[in-house]
Image 1 (cartoon, helix red, strand yellow):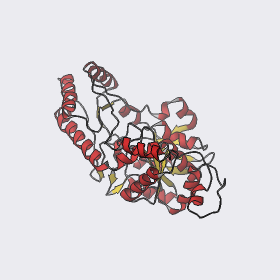
Image 2 (cartoon, one colour):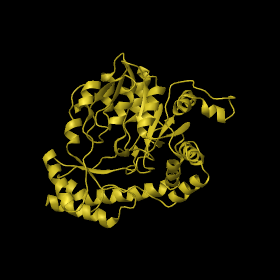
Image 3 (cartoon, helix red, strand yellow):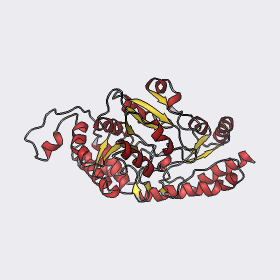
Image 4 (cartoon, helix red, strand yellow):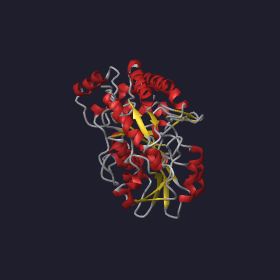
Length: 375
């Protein structure tokens, strides 16, 4: 069986975990947490990185930092994971879903302005498959209407938009280091605070609402409860595993891009025949090969292709069920405008096996099976 995902391991994970155990520092903000944060800050040129237990928690922190309150409205795509919406619903916000672009599966930047009301507080673009949204247009709209932009860059670590890394273009960004992501520690994430005004409070929120970080820097003589917050620090074991991956980020990125390009080349004839659609990468974007997907013509065709691949020992999966069509989505959100593409495009999309060190032979087997399906 060719598995859909195999979490990356680069070599030093066990050694770094062993070091953390030997040094008896297992809770958050130890050596490897600090090394990982520094690596992210230096590599991506962000003001402050704070490792978290998940991207979900990074988004929850962003919602607190954005001072989201009951009745505020948050604009985002419906084609995303539940955490993107949940983080703001937990603060009492109403989610306003807008349609996606069919080429990138990202939020349609031209529809955002029409969805803005007096209650709108923030825009949350989701960089699907590690391909950037049109951040110039989104930031321009946000500036005119005095809105915050919080990037859900869960899939976008190492991807760029016009030479700048995803997660650093908005006021805040959120990364995921879940085992399905390019760089992982089982479960993990990071909040990127791109404005100085968020840094100190972000540390407090992450430390259960205490000024513990200031205490350890000698800025206060004792620490106490000063704000709302929760326990968002990852274990040092997780951070040790992650740092081993970050040290090899370029190697992992290049390896995945080679696999992505092999898929694209191998499936191009079927695409040219009009049988399938392949991912589109805008010229201003450089992606991280987070996933490789194709689009069938119909939901029925996708179902039959999935079954065919499974029969030939190949795992493939569809992705999100649009949030606005879910029970909670109808309760906590509304869809603005017409759903021209969100539902129809999501029903055609099929994700293929993609992970670090996926062999050329396995890629060729997947391509061969898809080719035979369409013969």
